[in-house]
Length: 279
Image (cartoon, rainbow, N blue to C red; front, side):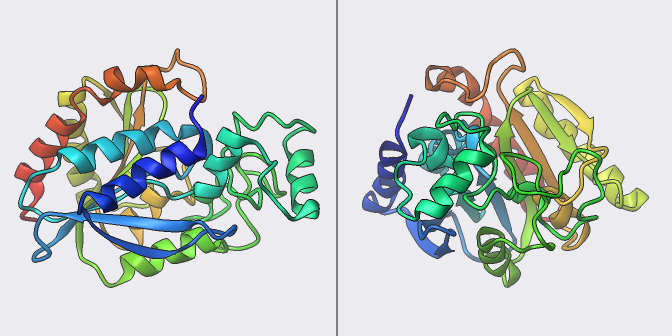
C-alpha cells in the first residue's frame, strides 16, 4: 500500500514543476487543501475533484495524471484531494493523531480496529459527500451518528473541508463539474430535483462522458447531500460523478490498477472540453 507522505509528495511535485496552484484552506487536522489550475483564466472554467471519500484515494492519482497531461486552452481547476485527513487514516492508520481523545474516538468508530482501509469519512467521522446542502439528510443510506461512512454531520456544510471548498467555488464561474470516486465504471448524472431541461442537458453530457470510457451512465437516484447534487441543483452547474474501476475490485483499489483505470480518462476529458467548454 502507498503512504500518505508519498501521495503528498506527488502533489507537491506538481507545484515544484510550475503548475499554477493555490491553497484554498486547511482540513480539520491542518492539512493544506490544494487547487491546481491549467489553461486560460478567462471564460467559464471546468472543475475536477477527487478523494472526497478516503478509501477512494486512487481517484487522487487519476487527477494528478490529468493535471500532468492537460494541455488545453480552456481553463480547468483540479482539486485532487478533498479529504486529506481521511485518506491519511486509510493509508497510515491513526497513529499520526496526537490528540488521544480523537485517536481513541476514531478507533471506536472504526469498530475498534486500527485498520482504516475501508474508511470513507473525514477525521470527525463525517461523510463529506453527504454533508452538502442538497436535500441534506433525506437519503435512506445516510446515518445520524459519527461513523466510518454515511454520517451527514450536525448540519449542512458543517465540515471545514466543505466550507473551504464552497468558499473556493463561490466567486468562480464553472461550466461543468466532474467528481471522481471509485468504483463501478459508472457515470452518475441528474440530481432528482433538476427540472426537465436541466435533466436532459445532464443526460446528454453524461452520454458523452461515458462513451469514450466505455462506462455505464446511470441517473442518480436516492443520492442527497453530495457535491455533485449541490452543484447541479443549487449552483446550476452540470455536475457528474465518475466511479473509477471495475466493481469486482475491492476497496481500496490497489495502485497497480492505475494504468488500466486511467486509460481513456484524458481522451474523455479532451472531448468534453472541446464540446462543452464554450457553454
